[in-house]
Image (cartoon, rainbow, N blue to C red; front, side, top):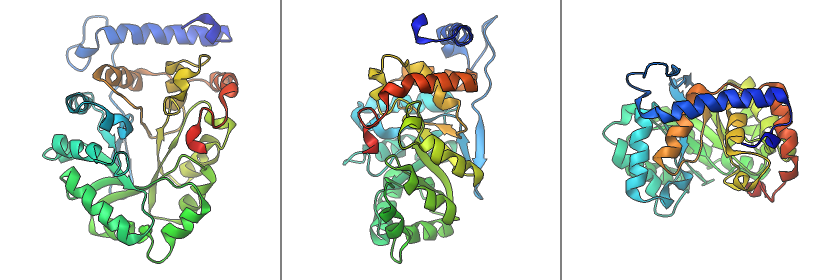
Amino acid sequence: MKDSCLHNSHSRRRFLQWAIVVGGGLAVYPQLLGAQPQGARSMRPMAITKIGGAAVPFSRMGIHGLDFPELPREDAFRILERAVELEVTYFDTSANYDRAHEGERWLGEVFGNRREEVVISTGTHMREAVDAERILDDSLKRLRTDYIDVWKLEAIGTARDFERLTASGGALETARAALEDGRIRLLAIQGHQNPQALIPFIEQIEEIGAVQIPVNCIDPHFKSFVEDVLPVAREKGLAIIGSHDQALGSLRLAHKITRREAQLYTLSQPITTWLPQVRSVEELEECAFLARTYVPLSSAEIAELVERSAIYAGVAFEFYKR
């Protein structure tokens, strides 16, 4: 990273210390879960937080499944197998990520006979109970399981979504029935368009146990989930799954913010699980190492990073908020 990316000497010293640790750690990373080379930095375990009456264990880092259907099958399987070796046990997918439902099918193939080793999250965009019931049943079959750890009511973005999902015959009825009969262990809501649309669910629906939202350094400037949803979810004791640390790829074009800085911002927020999008085993290992070794940014560093990101505010970069 160039010095110009950091605007004060304290931040620069902190970043260089971190870079030395990560740079050295990655060089020996394959050995870090086994015998430690002499002089190697000891790593803390992947943190686990248990949420809800069913005590669903959320690993500090998970894997966002949005990109999986675009990967060759063999590459996706290697990532899944390596993730468990690295104690990354939270896997996000959805019935809506791809038309062929490869994300769910592949998770089922890899973990169908090792179900107790992983936490699987999937969900539906459907608003009516009859449609949601069908999607849930299909997801269970594709995942080769009789229960889903975290089931999401997805793409919540308008006040109308609350009305439809909670009405008689709405998908919330399916979720409540599935919680009762054990087909799902924890109910979540997911949204990336309008933070205000999630607030009524958090405040009024007692079955909600988790929320999945964008958490990145440009979010505070426009329709902010970090400022509007995070505090309310924390107050209710919900699991908070932070996704979109790179704004679904947009931040890769933001020359004033490095990928690592964006990741550190997300990890420094009060979230339960970080969901990076990984497309290779190398990216997975890099993210897992960071999740085990990072030092949270200070309030001053966060403020400086958010200020520097202001030029990227709006739908040009956060296109999912349209």
